Image (cartoon, rainbow, N blue to C red; front, top):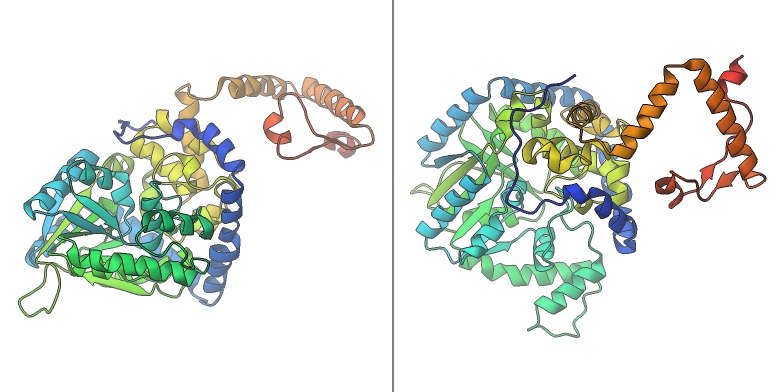
Length: 479
């Protein structure tokens, strides 16, 4: 049985993972959300399948991607130090940050030294993890999200609900409503019925903000130890404008984003886009190596890389270290039946879906997230599609072991399992009880053949009927 992690952290930002059951009920009763979630299967899932089918060597690439990440994790200290040396050699600055508060303070200090009034941001899950927008706003600096999805949810004052499609829970009509409310200086009768019109309006509103920004903040899909470069992949071009137009570029990255060489980065890029959106490559794949040189036409004058630990060193030294292979493609979310039913906000923190149910307990503590590892059917689809072959079902089970060991299991569930265990250890009694129960259920259903309500099974019967048993038990038929 796996040992517990040495430390558990409680974040200052609000975490609602402990209210997962209540969050789930709200999500299931939200018709707009349920309609939006249908796009997962008609979009990302089918696109990923077609992209993989077009590449005969796709499974071999997944093996290669897994091996690259495993090699990095086994020598992480070496590659982090090499990255720092190469980044500095090209004029960049590396900041080692132990936790979210440290990282927020470093970012704020860089912005204040630049006398920044506005900061443009590309999509960054690390930015969400450390709640950098809230911190900048509290200190008089305006953060402006430039990814379309992030821009929409910023106007709606919401967190992202998906790691690659942050506004997937928002309908077109809801986007139009928030644009009319926020962009109040425009013609209220303008046509926002078409996605192209919404996109054009967002582009027009953001264009000047790029030029006005003093600092640009992006995430990093990969950091290359060989060259000291950061890599981002986008489909909108906002990342390029965010990191080249302002005087200062800040990269937010966690320590496991390191890859040894540019060749390794290329291998990972080949599985990233195909797994995420079903594209051969994202529209923009941008490499940044230090500030602009004297001969460069454009680019930032300062280049800073924030390397965040925030609990990852503890994960690296635990049975959950394979989670650090994750390249944030979102494939496990797209294929997960639980995420597909409740969306991302129900998980209560930055990382939703199967990857979040494994990662979040390690970063913010099992006490705060004890419901998440239970929110899985263990169907294995997440592992089946993961581009770096993370054994997510196994890791979810390991968290379940810890939940039980620490006495965090729901008392009703524990009581029910104890009764089942008592019976299971006594086969004759078990078969007798099962035969009796099946007979009672079959008689109670009569001609209907199903139940709309059963005591103790409300969670099942409130959304679906419970089929009544028909005929003999399996063991009776076997005999």
